[in-house]
Length: 373
Ligand code: GLV
Ligand code: MG
Image (cartoon, rainbow, N blue to C red; front, side):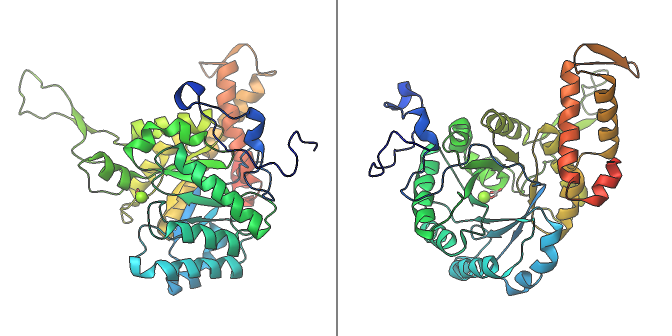
């Protein structure tokens, strides 16, 4: 494509922020120019691939790596984790293990991601350099933890462009940020909008709880102390009163979903640490699904099936959605179906359900049969 810039022009800085707040703003056309000479063109749309579970594995653990060929076909995303959970003494082994996995495992349709160490750690830079230059052609997405603001994404954006150019990659690696500090939550819209590489966000409830000084020691999920209580009956405050446990993460997930959707990227729930409590894990995942998340992390094989079940629309909901779509004809106006009003807006809700079901069923004959496609 002809360009207004000569080939000897330096790639522009990617600063896409309001003029009033940050001074000079870059030309909107520059936003989709590579940030290094020879780097691939940024994407204009985030590819929407099945991403119901991001399955974490520690690349320094040979026993777990040995199980990967069996796990890969059962997950939408496989993620080699280099950050928290990997002891400091194993950081280099984990990085080498990640490279080995990238070079030896057949991924088929499964996406391959890594979570690098945070930008303020002694390992983050080497993680990025090694991952991109050694196995950049295999990596779909790099997850950056503890992102606090757009400046973190700008740093990674430029560095990835330089590394992609060096590695001769022909497609850009996308970036996924974990929302796990109060400052990150306060800057969530700017983080989502900081680069065309931004693919999505995950909620990091453990780090976020610590950073906010919340008083829960659990990794995600609810807390029995966070509740509302029925009013006393006849003024008897000690009498039987129903209590309703509340969702500690509702505000943050809802805020994350709005920021992601407003910027064309994908929201995910993160980890659920109580592996044995598969019931509460399913509840947490379903809350996230209902609020708009596309997937969650699986930290143990038992959570893979939960995420697959929860983040694939229920066949009964899909059947109902198809009935509404059929009954609504051209999709405008209002009708009554089973005593309920359906209109232009409700048919859009139904399309969300059917479009997700259709895209998931395309690669999954069992799901296609369940949906009657
Ligand atoms: C995930 O990284 C978390 O801190 O919850
Ligand atoms: Mg964390």
